[in-house]
Image (tube, rainbow, N blue to C red; front, side, top):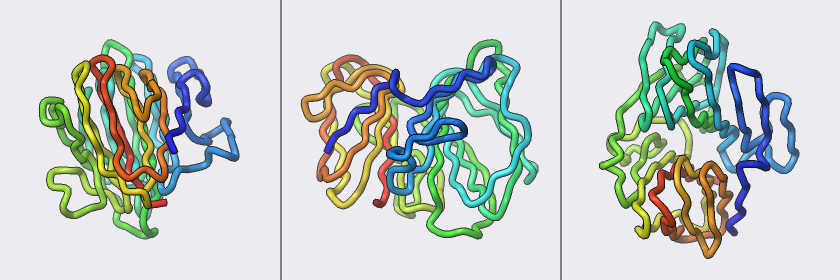
Length: 233
C-alpha cells in the first residue's frame, strides 16, 4: 500500500518564530488515525526564524533525529555537548534516561528541518548526542543509512531502535530501488523535488506511508532529495 499524505493536508501550527507541519499527532494537533507508523512517532517539518529556537527542555526514552534541509541548527545539552549541524547533515539525540537540550537558529536566514522521533526498543538507555556530515554525492542515485539501529550500517549514526533513517538524491529521470520488505513499514518525505512511486506523483514535502511493499521503486520527475524511515511494524 502506498498512501500519499499531501503537505497541505498535514497538521499545521504557526507560532510566529516557528512554522510547523505535523505528519503525526503532536502538541495541539491530534488525529487518532495518525498517532504513529510502526516505531515512528513524530515527523515535524519545521521552519525556524533567524535568531530564535527551542529553549532548554527535557526528553526521555525517545530517539530524536534532525535532518537539516536549509540553514543550520546549533545544539546544546545537559551532557555538555554543543554543535552546529548544517543543511544535508544529521544529528541524533538519544534521550534515554533523561536529557535537557536547546536547539537554536543562530543564522541570518530561516532554518528548515525535519524533526523525526522514533520510539526506542526499550527504556533506560544512557542519553547521548552526535552529528555527522553526509555529503549528497555519497547518496547520489541510492539510499544511504543516516541513522540506524543496525550494527552493520557502517557510518550511520546509531539509534536504539529497530529502524533506519535513510537519504537519497536523484537527478531528473533517475530511478532507484529500496528493498523494504513486506513485513516492514516505510515512511518517506520529499525534502526537495518530485518523484513517482507506484504510478503516483509525490511532491516536495509530501509524506508517503508504505506497507506491504517488498521493493520500493522510485523515479525522479525532477532533481530530488528524499528521506525515508524503515521501521518494524
